[in-house]
Length: 74
Image 1 (cartoon, rainbow, N blue to C red):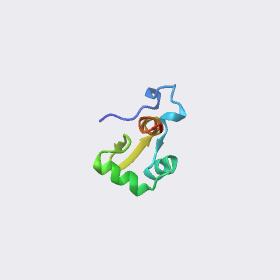
Image 2: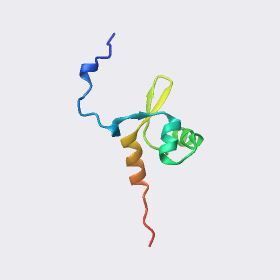
Image 3: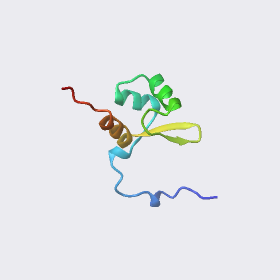
Image 4: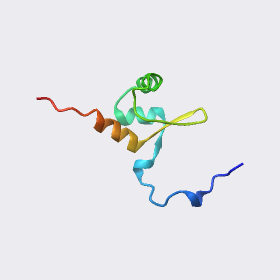
């Protein structure tokens, strides 16, 4: 069995690597948590991490999702 070793965590972790709960991610995106839950089930939302039963979103993944869905009108 392997154990978590804090020394193995890269020293360059920035705020963009912070893990957010579904509620926090929804607040960050300006959405309802239910929207993220539905998108996750449909496979159309931002990338997420499953840690056992817990779902977490990396802030840099949320930013990438926003950039990928940014449009400019004519």
